[in-house]
Image (tube, rainbow, N blue to C red; front, side):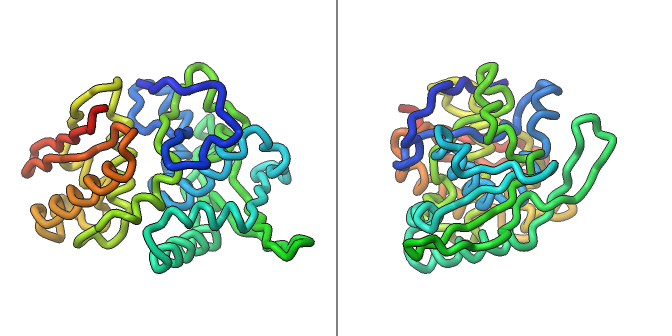
Length: 283
């Protein structure tokens, strides 16, 4: 399944919270779609905030992409990000503390992150750096320009515009700056905001049409994808009611912050062997 996307994106696509952009579709039943975005989803799953950051930067600058992107090697593009663009992304966080925490996470990911990458013909499987901060340049006006390397096997679809062809097969659309906006939600017992962000990503991929009220999935599948830090060997390491309560409060908060999007705003987590039902806000 795919969600149709616009082929024409305005120059200021991500200036405000309510615009949309492309992300990998992770719930496709078509084998060609799964192969198309397998590497992208691995990066998104392991480093959600950093993938979100680069997807925003790329999409916002789609019309001038050749001015900020340089093809530097067989495997990597070089992306130039101004300090202003960096701060604009972080500016959607709730407060200074969360802004600094998110920046530290970003810097850790672009310094040490690795992800399993499969070649198109599946002859090679390697661990590669999906992104790296290579240097910081001081411009003539004293501002900083961050130079990042982005792995082509992950970001080429967004950079070249392939994600917009054929109706956007293999990609979905989500609110701009979704991860930093997510930090504005109260996370309760959750260790990070990752489960809140991932629940909405997973929910959007399960949503096949406007006005759909809910979607369902296997409980074990949901726990593995959303709560890897709490779910081990078929068992939850914390109370399910407490976990569900924290996630429910958080997704309600994000839904209220983005009133023009049909995001997840309620959930029911079944018991062992049961199902999880994600309910959507309808507009």
